Image (cartoon, rainbow, N blue to C red):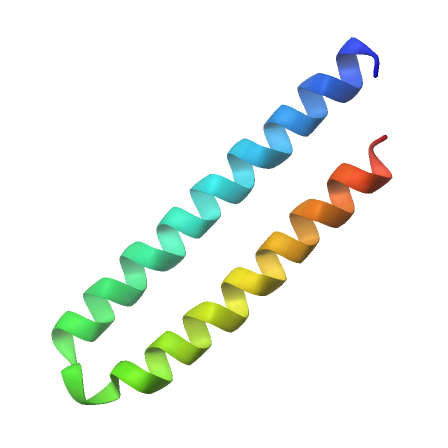
Length: 64
């Protein structure tokens, strides 16, 4: 891999990590506010996290 591709891959990983952190933090705040909705919040969080990771993997593959 060339240097620009490595920098791009690093930025993708950093962006995905930030996104996953925000998703997790927001989900924990939502669960703290509404404990009765824990199952729905966790389901939505897992779906969004999976889509984000899929997008990050696709960007890494396309950036090669």
